[in-house]
Structure formats: structure tokens, C-alpha cells
Image (cartoon, rainbow, N blue to C red):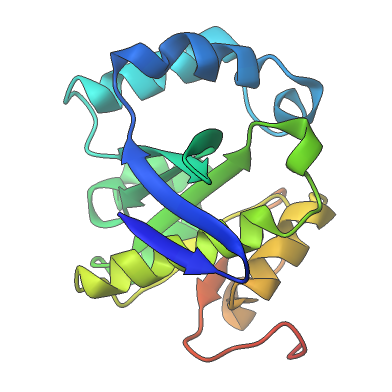
Length: 182
């Protein structure tokens, strides 16, 4: 699964058990700790994905063949339950066929270099090729670096959901959107 975007040779490989130690190291880094939960808990979630107990699909972001980040997609429909809606009411207002994407750059030397937005563009392209049309991402609005990268990748805030859930900005991919569109 490869895509070349703006000079960064970006590809993706499904996470497997051999990646756990690296992912744990990344999850302990300050730039990831700021937005992710407890590293052991988060790694447990990833293990559940890899071992089939969670339908989320985890991947490593490869830059020029080297692992530099983490990206996953998850299915909205199964999360449209009363239990999930208590903390995430916005879930109930999305199409059941939508998928959500999450990502982080693991290598701190690549932060704010365009890798995240380019990887996200390539990943969205791959997802669209698989037939997914409704793609969202849900950063913390205070994570300005992420919001900017997602905007560059063609994501825009969903107007009717803005400001309705504290700590969450729901953004949807808009085909053809550019970084200059606000």
C-alpha cells in the first residue's frame, strides 16, 4: 500500500505483534502523551485490534520504507450505541457507514514537516479506493498542529457539530478541498 505525495514516499503496513515495542516507545514520548492516554492502555487497545477483538484497522506510516508514525481507521456504525453516545453524542449524527481516522507521527523529528498531512492524504486515497465515502477525524481543537495538518489534508469542521462536544472537533474529508479554504 504505497502512495507518493509531495516528495515524501509514503506507504502503510498493517501493525503486527513485532511492532508493539516500537509503538510503546512512541506512546511514551511527550508529544504523544499530550494527546493519547496511558501508554499501556493504548497499546492494549492496539493489541485488541491486531488480535481481532476490535474491528479498528491499525497501520504504521512508512516514510521511505521506515516506520515513522501510526494511523488507524475505525467504523462509526458499531459505536452508535447509547453507551458510546453518552461521552460522544456526535456519533449519533454521522452516517452509519462513516469511518474515523486517527494518526500520530511517532518520530518527533518529523513533527511539523508535512508528513502527517501527506500521510493522511495518501491514507484517505486508499480508503476511497476501498469504497469509503464518509471519512471523519476527531482531534482535540486545542491540538493546533493536528488541526492544521488535517485541514491541509482536506478535512473541514462539520458545522452542525462544532463546539457541541468539549475537547472534540469533528472534521470530515471534503474531496478537492485545499489548505487555503477555511
